[in-house]
Every structure is written in structure tokens, then in C-alpha cells.
Length: 108
Image 1: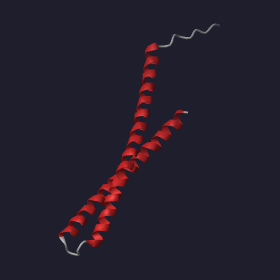
Image 2 (image 1 turned 90 degrees about the vertical axis):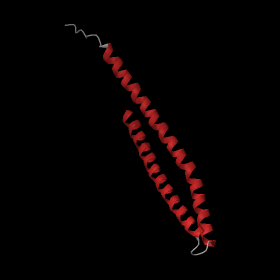
Image 3 (image 1 turned 180 degrees about the vertical axis):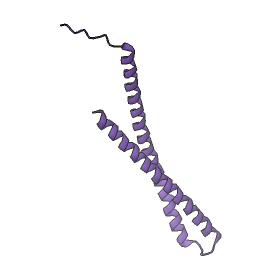
Image 4 (image 1 turned 120 degrees about the vertical axis):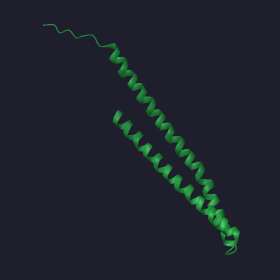
């Protein structure tokens, strides 16, 4: 007996092809976002660290109850908050990186 295979539904094939292409585009965007995020984090870390060191050095020479000391301490608190935000962003970038690795290993 001869088996006849029904013709493939070209609309379904095109739909699957679009989904694969869309998934690949999303994967590439995710990878790009991760790289950009890591670059921004690295670019911001150095000047923030330098400002923190400068504040620490300046605090050593500021008078105990001076207005400039209060200003420096407030500035140091702002630097701490900025560093906390950078750590959160770094953790997020690492999560993106792990997801990319998972996606790429699942695709193989």
C-alpha cells in the first residue's frame, strides 16, 4: 500500500519560522542589553570609586564639627547609594548572562 503524505501547511511552517526568527532576535537583544549593561556598570564604577576615595581623604583634614564635614558625609552617603545601585545592576546583568547561557545550551 502506498502512503500519501498530506502536503505541509505552508502557513504553519511560515508561522513557526517567524517564531524562531523572533526568538533569535530577542536572544540577540538580550545578549546586547547584557553587554551594554556590563559596560555601563564598569564605566560608572571607576569615577564613583574615585569620588569615594577623595571624600575619605578630604574627611581626614576636615574639622570635627565643621559644615564642610557635614557636606562630605552627606556626599559619602550619596556615593554609597550609587554603589548599591551599581551592585543591583551588576546582579541583574549577571542574571541576564546566565539566561543567555541557558538559552544557548537549550538550543543545542
